[in-house]
Amino acid sequence: MRVPYSREYDPPAPVIEVTVKPPKGKGVRVKALIDSGADISAFPRELLRELKLVPGSLVKVQGYDGSIEEIYSYFIEVDVKGIVKDIVEAVPGEHMLLGRNFLRLVNVTLRGKENELEIVDP
Image (cartoon, rainbow, N blue to C red; front, side, top):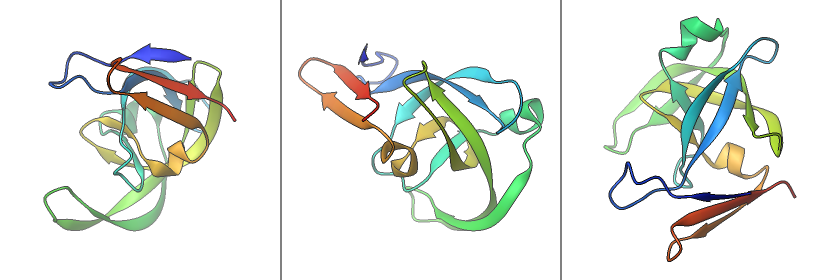
C-alpha cells in the first residue's frame, strides 16, 4: 500500500490511518506518524478512557528533550487497513506514533523525493 505524505507537517511527513483498539473490543481510526526514532509506539491520551485500556507495566521513557519519566504502558491492537494487524505495547502521549516496536512487523519504504511511503506485510 502506498500512501502520500501528510502535508499537515512541514516538511511533509509519513502518516497513515490506522485503527486502534484494545486486544478485545471496538476500535477508533486515527492518523499515525511513522517514527523510526521512537523505541516504542504511542497513542493519544484521550483514547485511554474511550477504549477502556487496562495498564500493563511501568516503563521508563525518554522524550525528545531528554526528560525521563516512568509511565504505564498498554497493549493495543493496531490495524493498518488489513495489511497488518498486531498487538503492540504503547504509551500514552500527545499523538499516535508508530515506533520501531511496530515497524519491526512490516516493511516500510520512505520515498522522500516522491513524498510517499509504502507499507507491506512481509
